[in-house]
Length: 127
Image (tube, rainbow, N blue to C red):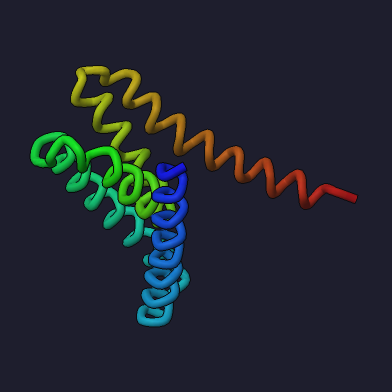
């Protein structure tokens, strides 16, 4: 139950942060290009790298799981799932699994875009 509470609280905070960044950047730059989401994805991936590295190499044993749940799964999951995608891709790459890493990246991006386009097409064609 504590794990779910940590994730729940972190995800709410991360979602609010994502909303704040995208709205703030959109107002500041006033351009149709999605700079806010790009910034969210890049900063989320940077923070995921910092958190994963700290948890793997620097943290005390009792800290790792609660911090991972709150920050990595919760805050960063609410802020951007792109950070988790980035971590998974890099871990595959670092393990020498280049073909699966490339397949994961290309498959995730291309198939996700095609799935979104399919969802839009389905809704547009509903009677």
